[in-house]
Length: 81
Image (tube, rainbow, N blue to C red):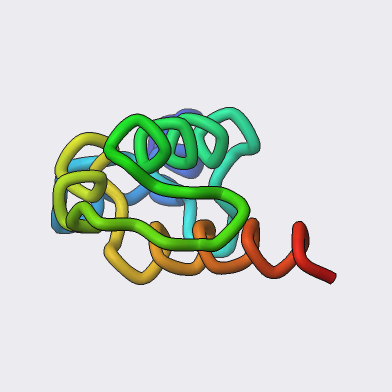
């Protein structure tokens, strides 16, 4: 076994084609990009309303729909509490 095999085994590729490490959260930079994309597509940070499709954001960033939806909902909840 080569020295870098161990590090490579920790990385996986999700069904969308993005590399990730199981158990590690999405970076803050990626989260901000996701929020920015939702806002660019008509999302309202203050109300949490998003007239677009989460699937469009999913395709752009190769993350799950659940991740995108949770990021958006948590942002709205943090702003309203």
